[in-house]
Image 1 (tube, helix red, strand yellow):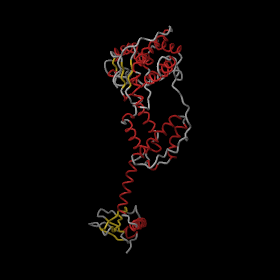
Image 2 (image 1 turned 90 degrees about the vertical axis):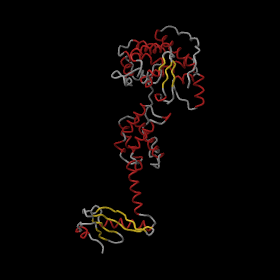
Image 3 (image 1 turned 60 degrees about the vertical axis):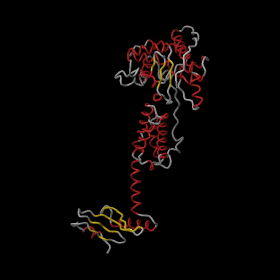
Image 4 (image 1 turned 180 degrees about the horizontal axis):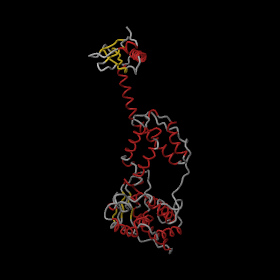
Length: 415
């Protein structure tokens, strides 16, 4: 006899579990603890199997019968209802584990260990910050459930605040996370692939840089008159001579600098291109570094934080010092020393463009060509480093340009 709600409600627990049969294999298991659980009994290949449907009254009698009918229909098609339920549970757990936030964190960790393609510390910090801006909107969602409109709405919040470059970069990073999910078999396709052109393109802004010889001289004299921290002044004085990236200067460590050999070797992990970069030091650069060494050597950061020597100088220190000297951000920046050197070295006509590019540590997509040029231009880079420092001294004093120095027979370092 089929069950009724009245019979089910009146069923009381006994000393042992017992069953109340409904129909077509459906029954209610009444436990000794008072629980009422729906079960379906069926056979697959002659073997009896059971399917747990749910608890009464959360699953009503009518709902239990619908689940029974669905299971029997699938059984008629050759599908095992119990196995299908287990698969659904596994898929649901995988879906819950594969939220955008979880995969985003996994992707960021991978990129920080990604061999020659790994992110620099500053890039990792910036990327993680931008991706976390998406957490409130899509971070909790399984990646398989995220639609293009969800991502667009999230990055539009940045765009609407006028942060066009951040919005563009965030969308780019989100796409990288989704493609990583595709590559690791957790997503069928990247939902951002059709969002190209959806955001307002930011206006490209170049780093402020002084590239006129006369104004360079004025800047160098202003730096010599800087009345702030001694370490900051030395960093400002050294920056135009070595023209490395600001982060490479800030993170310089004494273990990387050979003052007797006039060579600074920047490890691959600290460079943008993830390749070791060797910087030949002119006489002027060595003299400045020896002054720094007296203050912060012989170990640790050459330019430590003003607050603690276990951290490098703040990324804002040099730019803030330039502001203090009266140079606006669109006029001169820490990164601008690179554009200054690139422009004036190329204009001099004394050095090959390849040697200048090597000195700037710009990448070369052709590995064979890059390896050849590294060796072929080392001697030229040595000469260029000294000529450039001499030229800066000339601009500082406003005197006539010094003659090109005699070539020194200095051997190329390994690698």
